[in-house]
Length: 134
Image (cartoon, rainbow, N blue to C red):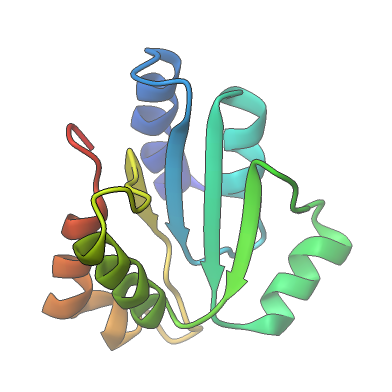
């Protein structure tokens, strides 16, 4: 899809530029798993954390679309806003908490972008999760 190509273009470019040996990506919204699969293939130093609210979507991505988890690619079943809040709290509590080089948002609930993924709280949390230069 066009919007996925747009999101991935800059992400892969920065990853290949080698800003670090551990290029961390947070993906809110798994969909069919195409984004983490593409990143895994085109950015060997990427560590991808995906968050998906719908267990059925996650199961479909695993069973039919080739998505799989390993040491470089994890999946958390959780609401996007809740996951961002949890990570932002951890980041505020510890300078050693995980920060991300990129945060990609692909929230969709069938009727559009959920309100929680458009809220000021969500965006503020995302900003707190970015690594310097992210």
